[in-house]
Amino acid sequence: MPDTPYSIGVDLGGTNLRAAAISRDGRMLDKISGSTDFHLGRDEVIGDMVRSVGRLRAIHGHKNLAGIGIGVPGFIDLDRGVIVGTHNLLGFDQYPIRDELSQRLETPVILENDANAAAQGEKWMGAGRDVEDLVLLTLGTGIGGGIISRGRILHGFVGMAGELGHMTVLPGGNICGCGNYGCLEKHASATAIEAMAKLVALGDNLTAKEVFDLAEQGNHNTRRVFEHMGRALGIALATLINIFNFPLYLLSGGVLPAWKYFAPPMRAEIEARSFTFRNTKTRVEPATLGNEAGLYGAAFLPFLLQQVSRS
Ligand SMILES: [Zn+2]
Image (cartoon, rainbow, N blue to C red; front, side, top):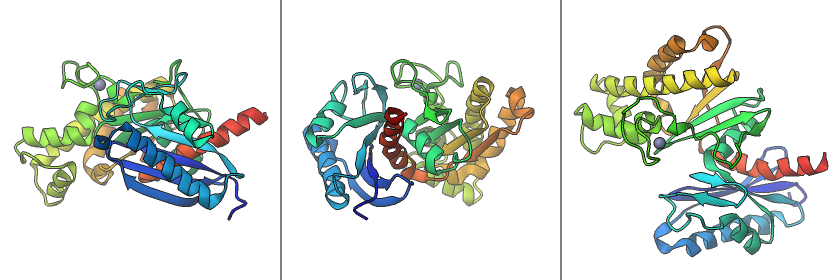
């Protein structure tokens, strides 16, 4: 397929580096996954990214490459192309990652927040294909958010819009790395589930997956964990629904298998708090692309740029 127009999407996570070549019509042509070792230093991670992109480009050709999109966790300053205040990506705070990669790859690079990219991916090829407006919440170690309005990522004036994990859902709740108390991600992420499991004496070092397994075995104490999580999500979603009146709100992440446990309290909370939800056909659903959403979304960004410059 050397003549297929394509772009390359990269997803840089705290432990994983993935890159994919995706065609203009949304076919995943190739995917590379590897681990990122931030302890080896920033230059090593940048080198890994350059090599991954280089491998895909060697296979699919320079001529048809529309561009490169990169999703990274954290607050993004779009104008400067930097990540601001990152704790997980050692050495990347304020580092000109976009320009450095662009220079080394001799191709324009588009930098984007990973959850924004995932939301764009769901809009392009996933659960949001039939709508123009949606919100995505990614439930992982933290909670990321992406807002798609009229088919595009809503950025705000710097690029930090959609940090939905930092909505306050419990005033005076758990302290968050962002400086606030009671952020959604402190009450509904996988990390929050693990912390709550300790509080209700399920066990000291259980992973969110193990808490889910206990629920499946009929352990009733897990109910309190998923009840709290579901209510926190419901409060956040009701607020989002009241603000946006979008038709679709998506949830993704490793905790989705627990949907049947947290969705009922979540829905009850949304019903109670959103007139808009009660009186419209607003949908709250699982996302469908899993951890590939970010790759699709990052790869879509160069195509979007082409469209804009053509019109
Ligand atoms: Zn926060």
